[in-house]
Amino acid sequence: MTSTHGTHASNGHAYAKTALVLQGGGALGAYQAGVYQALSEAQVGIDWVAGISIGAINAALIAGNPHDKRLQRLRQFWQRITSHVPWPAPTWGDASRQIFNRMSALNAIVTGQTGFFAPRFPPAFLHPHGAPGAASIYDTSRLRDTLTEFIDFDLLNSGQTRLSVGAVNIRLGNFVNFDTEHQRIGPEHIMASGALPPGFPAVIIDGEAYWDGGLVSNTPLTQVLDADTDDDTLVFQVDLFSARGALPGDLFEVESRRKHIGYSSRTRLNTDHFRQSHQLKRAIVELFEALPPERRQDEHLRALRDLGRNHAVTIVHLIYRPRGYELHSSDYEFSRASMSEHWQAGLDDTRSSLRHREWSSAPDRMNGVRVFDFVNA
Image 1 (cartoon, rainbow, N blue to C red):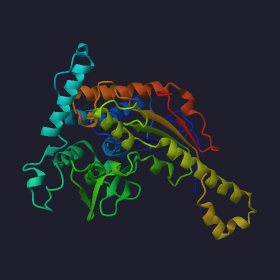
Image 2 (cartoon, rainbow, N blue to C red):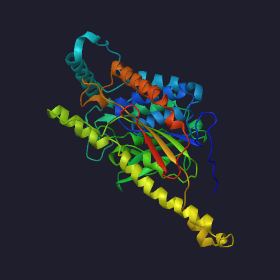
Image 3 (cartoon, rainbow, N blue to C red):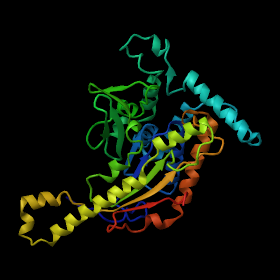
C-alpha cells in the first residue's frame, strides 16, 4: 500500500486527488455543467468524477472528452436536449414565469426532448405484457445516439479520469457501482444510471436489468469516501436537491418538498459515518506502526494493517437553490431559458465558493473529514 500525500501542484491545493460528485436531478443538471465551467476556469483538475442519473451523463461527458473539449461538449449536449422557445421577459414577474415553466414541462411530457427521450407509440398500455415497450412511457434510444455522438468511450475508459456511475439491479434491488477502475463502461451503463421508472425503460447489461441509481442513493458520495486509498482527497459535491426547505402551502409545494427530501443527499449522515470509521482505521495504522519491526512481519497483523487508512477528505458542498417561481416539475422542465439560468447559477456559486481559500488548506488527518458550504453558510 502506497501513500501519495502531498500537494496537487496543478491545482494549487494540498490534496493528492480531486473528485467531482454529481447528484441526479434531470433538467436541473445544467447547474452541474456551470460548476464544472468554474472549476475549469480556476484550473482545478479532476481525477475522479462520480455521478447518478443526469449526474452520470454529465460525468461521462467530462471523463469522455479531452480537457479542451469538455465545456464545448457539455454545452452541445445541453443545447441538444433543451427546447428553444421565446425567453420570458424579466418584467413578466414570477406568476408569468410559472405559466411558462408549466407549459415547458407539459411540452416535455407530451412530446419528449430532442436527443433524449420520446413518447412510445403505441403507448405502453397497448403493448402486450412482457413486451419491451410495455414497461415504460418513453423510448430512450435517442439518448444512446446522443451519448455516442458527444462521448469518446475509448478515452473515457483510458484511465485518464476515473468514472463511477450508480444504478440499481432490478432483480436484487441492490445499488451497483459501475467504475472504470474495474470494468469497461459504455453508453448502456450511463443510460442504466438514468433509467428512472416508469418513464424510462430498464437497461439490460450482461443479462441483468437496471434502473436509475437514485432509487436507492441519489448521491455517490459514499463511493468516494469509502475508496480504497491513502490519498488525501478534495471532493466537490454538487447537489440538485436540498434537504432543507419551508413547510409546503399547497399540493404543488408538497410534491416539490417531497421530491427534495427524497432525492437530497445525506451529507451530514455520510460524513459522520466516515469520520467514525476513519478514526478506527487511523487507530489501526498508528497501532501497527507502534509495533516492533519483527511483529510487523506477521501476516495476520499485516492483513489488519491493510484495513487501516490515514488520509483526509475535504468536501466543498454546492447545492442548487431554486428560484421562487420554480415548480415541482423543475427536474423535467427542459426549456433553454431555465437551462441557461441553472448553468449560470452553478457557475456563480462555484466562483463564489472558490474565493474562500479555506478549502485549499492542508488536510486534517486527525478528524478525517471537513465540509465547507460557503454559499449556504
